[in-house]
Length: 331
Image (cartoon, rainbow, N blue to C red; front, side):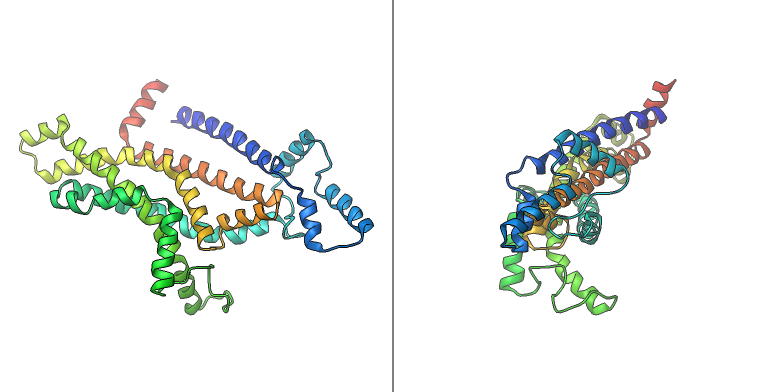
């Protein structure tokens, strides 16, 4: 297991290096000048003052250095935990801006990922044993999994927010409220959270249900299921073994789908103006904030890699064959 996880850490380390390098390159190859955008918001009219401020801020952000030196300085600052200063919200550190947005994104992603995976697998396994459910309800899963996150978010905002007026369609909480620990504020947070969460949950739920339904049917037709049935084993025991074997590819699928789910969350946040990382990235692009864009993407990269590593650990713990294979390899 030590050798297995050592290889995994090496792969994740190389992936992190490449992803962060691309993350550093993207803003710098975008059109536009972030310092010029910053000066435009300052509304300075004297040409001499504009040039002096341009020179000062260009030097302050290190944008007057050669690209290779900017790249080296970026890694040096990163290892010190310094993500730079936001150009859009100057002089606020990028870390502070991101930390205000991260709780909103995590509050969407973690429940949506875990609940959709659990509920989708349970429903798919149940539908595989009920012909009427397989023919009537499960086709809805095909529609859900083929639905773009943005389109479903817009549809829910229009139907439940604008037409029905049940849920708010913008923001993380009402603008008339101040954050506090009262039940009134928590309830308001939940109302603003519900539609973005449902948008993510429904799309992911459909995919997991279809995948588990297909895997259960395959496992129930496998040789070991037929053999157990011929020995007189109860159907409940056979279905339990089938589910345990069918859930393993679903765990692997969860690792593969994490990036898609994160991207869907970012898009959904933009639709609802939900104050998470997706909305923050849009604001950083619009204001040409290199450092804020880098920091937001960096958090996403680290989060996805860490979640994939946790899933690898879970897979080893769940599947005894993996541990047996690693033991034989080490021997």
